[in-house]
Amino acid sequence: FLVTRAQVNARASAERASAEQRRLASEARAAVRVRDEFLSVAAHELRTPLTSLKLQLQLLFRQLHQGEPVDTVRLERGVETCERQTTRLTKLVDSLLDVSRLSSGKLELQLESLELGELVRELVHRFEAEAQTMNVRLDVDTPEPVTGRWDRLRLEQVITNLLSNALKYGHGAPVEVRVLGDEAEARLEVRDRGIGIAPEDAARVFDRFERAVSSRHYGGLGLGLFITRQLVEAHGGRIFLESHPGQGTTFIVVLPRAGPVPGTPLPPPPPT
Ligand code: ADP
Image 1 (cartoon, helix red, strand yellow):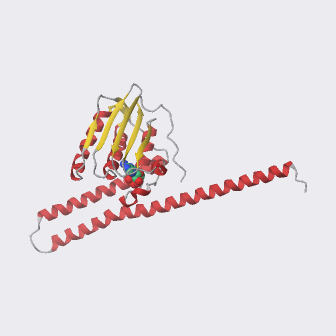
Image 2 (cartoon, helix red, strand yellow):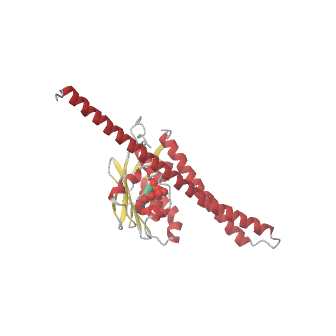
Image 3 (cartoon, protein in one colour):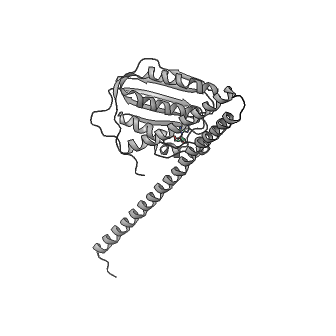
């Protein structure tokens, strides 16, 4: 048989095209799997506070209508639970809204001059009560002022996400927060000594809906780090982690002190 060079080339290019098709099909299946899993996790995460809210409201209703003097302590406790669950629901819905805003590139930063150490100390202070109930020590190290042009609310979100993850996955061990800086960049480190992240999960956890296998029973939507990374990158910065499974994780955020370069578009969201 005589096979011409043209036929060999045609066969090779057909094989390449079908390999590419298989790769695209497998990517599409993976995206559908991630989305389906997200929907089921999201439904569960929304349902838990809703169930608790409904139960509490039924209890309160019964207390008010049982014809006996109202026990104000029980009443107050019930209302507090309702408020906590409503806050939880609001946070979940806010994360979902943020993701859709970030995905459609509708995020606008309000830059102002800030001192990162001061902001971090303020936020750690807000976490103090929660840390105390979990018996966790929060150590803050801000050796010198590090100023820069950043969006206060968005940076608060970044720091809050990292702190709440450190408490959530931190095994009750002390959490350390550090702010450093040089002329060009500020560096924030949030270190815990908790469950850690396996090397094969380390890059994935910054993606939308992605959660490490080790943390499946903790609950969560897998959106916090995605939002965090997008906000850091919108500031022209970068975020990465160092981790040893079973020993803990350090998240490191590096931000240019001059703020993002004007006109830099938001990084494109991953294609899911
Ligand atoms: P979630 O709501 O699931 O916590 P995040 O986007 O904040 O979502 O985090 C994504 C995943 O990254 C988590 O589900 C968890 O697997 C992992 N993760 C985040 N922070 C930590 C941490 N400090 N230690 C260990 N694993 C973490």
